[in-house]
Image 1 (spheres, rainbow, N blue to C red):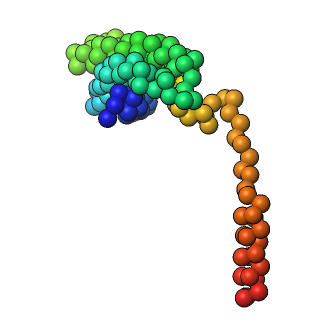
Image 2: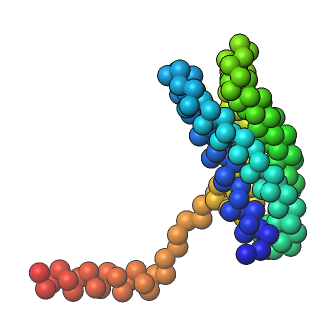
Image 3: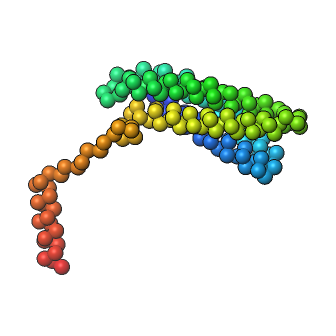
Length: 174
């Protein structure tokens, strides 16, 4: 497994983990379940930690693919810029989730406000994560780019004639 493969394997964990973590945290607050809230906070912390190797493998992944045909340096740069913002956001979510977990374990009055702050920052990080993921996908998947136009299929005229002949034979048999 090379660095690019490792990077595209790891990148799903912080994104999916943060989406699930925020959703579970919202559910935990709605149902007033401290166990659910704690589970969500731990998931957000783990997601933030998982973002570190994802981010660190990005540079090596760039070195692996930047000279391949069809790879745009501008798209790589855009992805890199968005990833730099995301690593700070998801890191802040992880720290806030850790603080929230500690305040919940100590049953401090501020914990509910911290839960809400974690949700809000988590939602912001999810929006940025979507942009990071999409910009990363656009590097090697032109079909998801905004300016992509699909080419029309052009079948070989001879193949079309042969297909018509086969269809005529089938009709005559029936």
